[in-house]
Image (cartoon, rainbow, N blue to C red; front, side, top):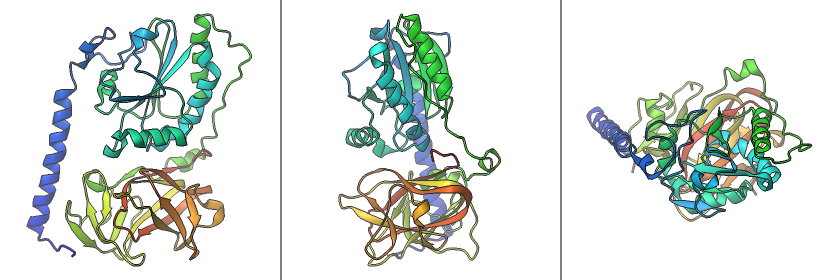
Length: 380
């Protein structure tokens, strides 16, 4: 049943969520220092700096595509340390370049280590990461940094981020975010040449078209669901928002852009928004007005049964020429995403940037959303 809470009850619930989030942050701050003592690399707490010895890879819960690796055992090689997480669209867009470099240069002395540091709890599950690695064709070593040991050792705050480490273990290059693929490959070749590898005539990847610069300045930012979205002012129904409890949300007469609205019965958690009931039809909705060329959504099924999420674009089914790669048409003629696993789903891939409205609805109570991401470039 929908819960109608008093203002005092809503305030107490919000205070509880704030306290929980603060407790998690404090715990991470307390437990992270000192782990670098397990290594013979950079001094504890110094982080990663160009020209300095690279911090060691530590605190890894599992490895994919390789036996456990340590930088101290890779002297004589060139190592690319890539911090990523599989629901990050910016990270996903870098993977084709990383896989290409692995194919080109692995037998010439390049070792790529993908340090997978999760943003959401479900990204800690090794089966989910294995599925993502298969989906994106990742065959180089992947380290599951679930406790953020290596993330903290490098003192990084960004996904994606790439460090190039030379044959002596020194960081020679550091790049935050997407892009600069040509420059990165040039540095890879330079470091491989230093160890005597023949990289002549190997060619080079090309940087993609970044998209309209002026339009990109106004693109909708990443929108988080749940408590994080609330505290970043990204929830549209702010006057109704109540964490933990199922709430019957109603839409206002006018909708603002760049926020998430809920209509119907939803429960707000720390990381996401959870559909709070099963329905016979598409009743409860998530609504977002955005400005971008592409739209993506992180969805996690809360049970083992697959389900469809219906999507409308400006009040109609998605036209074929703008459907994201995860969108199909069901027997009723609706455009839907078929949710089978916890991952990033591509909803819209339009030829031009523009202002639009998305509405998403599922009959299943297992529907949960975590974050929308938007883009403007040709890769999006």
